[in-house]
Amino acid sequence: MGINDGAGIAETVLHPIRLRIVHALIGRELTARRLSAELSDVPQASLYRHVARLVDAGVLRVTREEQVRGGTQRTYATVESAVTLGPEAFDAATPADHQRYFAAFAGALVAGFDRYLRSTGASPAPNPGSWPPGSPNSGSREPRPPLRLNDSAGRV
Image (tube, rainbow, N blue to C red; front, side, top):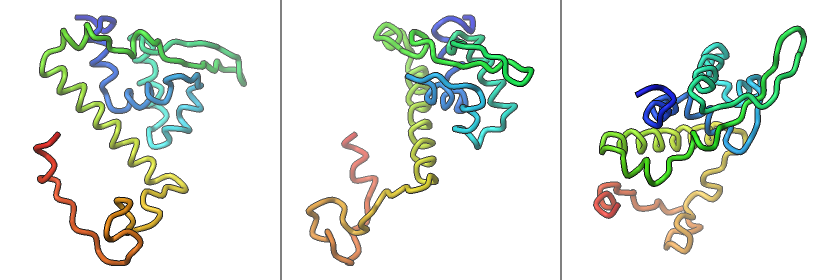
C-alpha cells in the first residue's frame, strides 16, 4: 500500500506532530510561519518536514503562494477527503487499525488538554470544591471524596 491510499494516509497522519498540524488546519488556512507560532513547542525544521510529508501524502494542499522577502510563503489547508474516515474505512479497518485510531485520538485529546492547562487564563476548576454541581461538598472547604477510576472503568 502506498502513501496516497487510505492506509498510507492514516499512517502518515497518525504521527503525533502531524496529527497536531492537521488538527490546527481543519477548517482554516495558515502559513507555515503561523503554524510554527501555534505549535511553538515543535522545532521549526521538524514542523516544515512534517508539513512537506503531509503535502506529499495529499493530506494538505497549498492554497496560496506569495513572494515575501525573497522567499515563497505558502498557505496550507487540509484536503477534506483525506482527513475524513467514512463508514467504509471503519468497516474495513482491522482491530489493530481501530487501536491506532483510538490511540491517536486519545493522544491528541491529552495533548490538547495539556496545551490548554499551560495556556494563559486556563481555569479548569475556578471554584475548588464545587464539582460536581449540587454535591454535598459544593462551595465548602471540606475535601472531596477521592475519584476511584476502577469504579467506573467497567461501565465504559
